[in-house]
Length: 201
Image: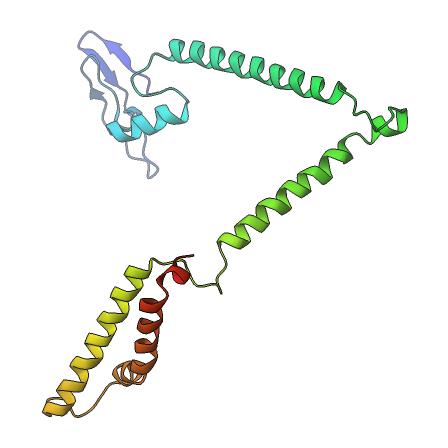
């Protein structure tokens, strides 16, 4: 902080010597003057909110109330943890009828749970594999599938009529592929119309 000198005229900053040997004049200051280097940096409302969040207090909440709420929350979490520990202890204390309790088996108590956990994980992974098979075709409603196939046939017929009319002489690769698949698409439509129940299952 700058040191101010007091005189009969008021406060003033004393004269100081520059590095080249010359002197700066003494400057008179008003009451409440804060030098530029001591002025606190301006913080926008957003910066203040971010700083408040990092301190752990919600914006606009009294820090004392926030501290009390935090203590209460921590207390509730501790009681929940104790309850869970008691439940786990009760479940582990109940001995299984087939396994005799010996000191050697009590030291290996967590191991029987591990295979059951791995079985659960295996079961979950199997169900996920069955549901998310990439090579298996997705189950689509027969009506929707028919609609899509008929749309493709309409597009192929449009391409063929353009060719016959002479509007289009060169076909793109995609258009050629579409025209080549016409017989296959017609076969799929016939299959769906004849056996719609098979495709639904």
